Every structure is written in C-alpha cells, then in structure tokens.
Image (tube, rainbow, N blue to C red; front, side, top):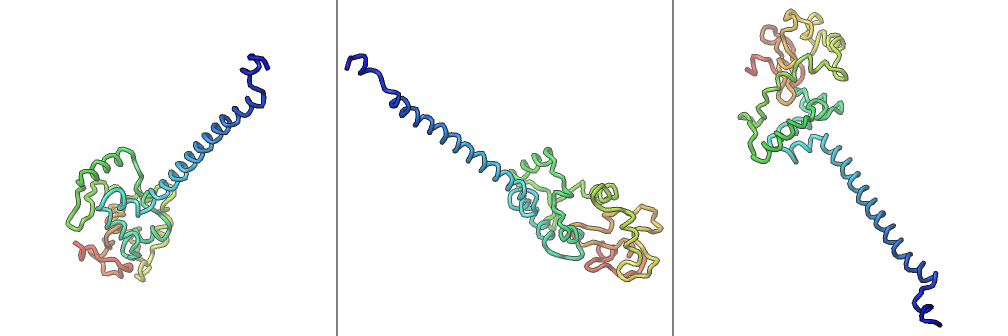
Length: 206
C-alpha cells in the first residue's frame, strides 16, 4: 500500500467518527429539553402555590399568620369564611401588583411591617376594599341578589333589610362585613335585631 493510501481513512472510518459527534448533539438537546421541562413544571407549580393562602405567610411575611388562620377557621362571623368555602382565594380579592410586591419584599427583608396590637397589618387601603365599588365589581356580588336575599335576615321581621334601609347608601359594606375580624351589625346601634351567626352588634364591638 502506498504512503498516500496509508494516510487516508476509509468511508467506514469517517462514519464511525461522525456517530459519537451526532450522539453528543442529541444528548445535548435531550438535556436541554429536560431542563426546560423541569423549569416549566416548577414555574406552573410555583404560580399555583402563589395563589394559595399558605404562600402568604410561608414566603412573604409573618404578619399574615392571623389572616391565613382566619381563612381556614370556618368562623361564621368572618366574611372570609363564605369566600373560602366558595373557593375564593387571596389573590381573587387582593390583586398582586408589581409595585406593591416590591414594597412588600423590602418590608419583609427588613422585618418592618406596621401592625396593630392584635398583630394585624395596618392597611390604609382596607376601607377602600370594603366598598360597593369593590364588592360589586364584575364576577363578584350582584346588588339586586344581595338585597333580595336579605329581607328578614337572621330570622328578623321581613321588613328589615340592612341592604335596603333608611340610611340611603351611607353605610358602607365594611361598616358591617369584616373579612378577617368579627363582623358587626351596624343596624344594632339603634335596632334590637337578631344577629347573623358569629356576629356582634356594632356598639358591643366599639
């Protein structure tokens, strides 16, 4: 065999050298695909957990302990109870806004959450949430249904309806309905009425 022939590989040798390279490329794409799949599944799982009450006091902030406990308490005096029983979660009412979440991250990092004596967050926007504009927004409560379902509420005379009263709309939802603390009957300031289960009279709570 000539020197020239000795220096040249056969087609079979070339094919054999190409096979490992092709195999490496396939393995690389396989590994990349697995990593992407894991990240996607993890992202979906995190997003689902992010919407659960347990996320709030596990990751974000300790002052949420009271709120998560009330969500799972089944206390009939708390507005959060019928919402929880209906499958409404935290973010259905408390919209996750990026600027607020960034502020919360800073507060969490510095352990600087303003709380009251009971350990509840001091929330200046709470009153704005418990308003007709908030509660009657699309997909939540219908005012006509609310009024029609509360004549003679809690076994009272059929003429009494806290949602159709002589107050002419001056009473806000939050004057009676409390999500994470005991709800109070504003009408009880003047009228001797039966209370919904678990509720207090407003004057007793003051």
